[in-house]
Image (cartoon, rainbow over all chains, first blue to last red):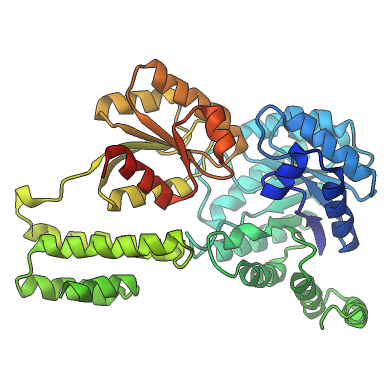
Length: 264
Length: 207
């Protein structure tokens, strides 16, 4: 399971404040902690200030890279911000995200192709978010046609089947898992990632929902997620799921984590 | 008797609520009394939601109960006794954004709280808002947007409504919207959830 650390996200209040105050220490601390907790990438989202996104994104990148060489996942829908930001990264970043929206395919996919990035591909297009897995599969088929045409190999594509909150649609966990199952058999080289916490939006005890959903989605074939790597119970659930799904040879990762006291 | 129906709704007992409605009608309870009891129940649920004791799925179920009860009661209502609408609202997700869940909940909550809502759907350009306000005479407009990219279209929609000389109060909401964004878009207010939207609308029409 690959982990994209979610914490450096300017749509979170404290991070937005840290960006506005240019609080280097706060951001660097988040970066280091998430790396120590096993993040493969660090998501970097500069948040909500209209017009200031490119500048804020670059400030984040420079300060994060000063304390870690873990690659970044540039989280923006703004092609201009991405173009500028990508000049500043030390390691090829992941791009979060493209989708079936023509605008994103036209403007963001070329950046991905040019720089050889990994990319998250959302199972949505410019219309209403699809409620059936069949429709989401169709959208991803279109997206992968485009990524292939642009020369991006399938193994660099991280399909996000979308985790809409179960608070408003109680089928959304099932739809996400079915989308993964259907696409995994068709695109064997592609990866599957999800923005985990959205599934529990608007409900109490969110961690409980997030953790259980992650286990179910891993069974369907999820091999990557944007999540809080500092959540120990979540990490324990991931390791145990990998063990039970036959992904942990000789149980070594599980035993190592046990010795480190992760399950206590 | 109306306490029985209020309790059934508040405690999310859907079948009981519908059964009680039929019983009350059969025993001669005035239909308006039943609808008032429903509104009282919705009020309690709305307040519980505001303070974090109730959650969205319960709001949705309560609304569904209310709709079903209204359908049962409607044929028994005298034509002129139908509940007066409080006021008109035009709602939509702004241009460039297609998120509808939060917007739908706001539309729904305004509706069951007595507002007549014109729903422009998603990706609605400024001209569509202007046209709908002119057509309906609504005094309140709600702009929804989840993406950060929605802020500029919101600002443009507010400007279009003002430039058209329309006397409307405008609220915005969705995603990460806060006071800074309100100021940026020049809307009159922002709301953090559906109940906030209902409270703003009530405040603006003076209920």
